[in-house]
Each structure stands twice: as C-alpha cells, then as structure tokens.
Length: 265
Ligand SMILES: Cc1cc2nc3c(=O)[nH]c(=O)nc-3n(C[C@H](O)[C@H](O)[C@H](O)COP(=O)(O)O)c2cc1C
Image (cartoon, rainbow, N blue to C red; front, top):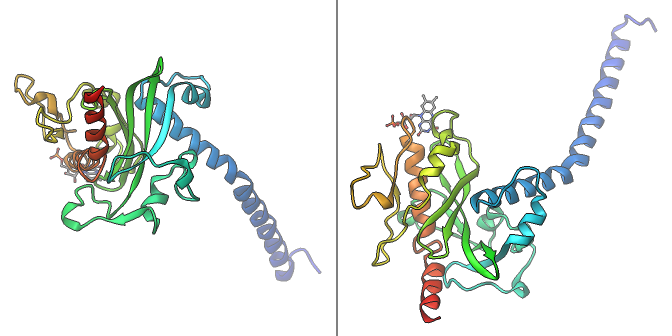
C-alpha cells in the first residue's frame, strides 16, 4: 500500500487518535486523586486564610491540626452531630457543602420566599471550624455560599469568640467577572469586613453590604460594608448570602445556643 493512499492516511490518523485518547484518558484517571488532594488542600488553605492563620510555605495540614477543631453541627438545633452519625456523605474529614446540599438525607429544599441566597436547597448540617488557642476558642470559621450574578460563591466567614464580630472573610470559588464581581477577592475589600458587627444588642441580624460607600459617622456603620462599584449585583448577592447563613436558616440557632451557654459560665 502506498504511503499516499487514502486507506493508509486514515489508518495512521485513526492510530494517532487511538493512542492520544488512551494517553488523555489515563492521564485524567491517573491525576484524579491528585486533583482531589489539591482541592482538599485549597479548602484547608482558605479555612486558614479566613482564620488569619495562613503562612506561605507552611504545612497546611499541620497548621490546621495544631489550630483548628472541626465539627459538624445540626443547623436547626445548633447541636454538634456525633461522629457515630457520620456516613458516606456527612463526614468532617471530607466535608463538602455541595454533596450535602444535593443529598436526600442531609439536604432540604428552601421555600422560595426564604431563599434569599438563591441556592434552592441547603444542607441541614454544616461544618464549624473552631480556632483554638491555649485550649480556648478564639474564633469560629463558618462556611457560607450563595448566588452572585453569574455564579454561586463559596467561602468562609470567621467570627470572634463573641460570636458577633467579623474576623475574616474570603471566597475560594466563584465565577464572577474579573475586575467587577471578581473584586470580592480584592484584599482591600475583604479587609472592610473586619470588625463589622453581625447582630445588634437585641440579637437582630443587621450586617449588610450597601450600594456605595458607608457613612463612617453613622451609628449603623458598624453593620455595613461598602458595595463594589460596577458590581452591585454580585455584592447584593454577597449581602444576601451572608444574611442567609447568619440568620435562622443558617448558624443563628448554633450562635444563640453558644451565647446562652457562655452566659451561664
Ligand atoms: C460583560 C459584563 C460582565 C459583568 N459582570 C458583572 C459581575 O460580575 N458582577 C456584577 O455585579 N455586575 C456585573 N456586570 C454589571 C451589571 O450588569 C450591572 O451593570 C452592575 O452590577 C451594576 O452595578 P453598579 O450599579 O455598581 O454600576 C457586568 C456587565 C457586563 C457587561
């Protein structure tokens, strides 16, 4: 058969395709565990960032183990879920909000009028990461997520031990436009959250992101964060998702329970 024949050309082309497809699929399968591991490390890194514990070059697993006590809580009651109730989906070592959200056992639909975070379903249980120092809780890092303009934003908010003062704020995954909604990653904007208050003295949820710049002389300034200009829709989404997760359907029962316990000490 001549090298220029159509048959030979097709044989060579098919052979190359076959070898390439084997290489690509084995690379995809072979690299999957590495990708999963990197995803897990990225999550750890972001928990540490929210807790202001991240230092470049340090062993993430070690820093996490030495400083953070993680557990899963029942959102409705605020109680810690014992490890004996863990299963394939609910497990602090492989905690994944998306898995729980879509789970028939651990997820539930949100009535449309209460779904301010635009997520349709929510986990009934969420992870809480306690930052420990000398045997005492210093901060609580709480996972949060909700709809922006183009995407669902996933992140963490860290609260001080008073359970009312923001100590860290970060997103680790979103698909908002770089330079517009993507500015939620801007360290300067994230810094604006630090020391803002969540609830007023009557326990009413007050934190919000406003359109424009907060009037620093206003008595309510401590509850308000500047919106990102040119990204009102993303920042409105962020405001709603934070309020959802710190409200009754989110961590409020857990927070109220802890505040009650702290009072009795
Ligand atoms: C290509 C494109 C991408 C955009 N991306 C975002 C975005 O990620 N987040 C956002 O809030 N607005 C985005 N906008 C702008 C919104 O359509 C809207 O104008 C804006 O949120 C209004 O904010 P402002 O009132 O602060 O100007 C985008 C607009 C365009 C044309």
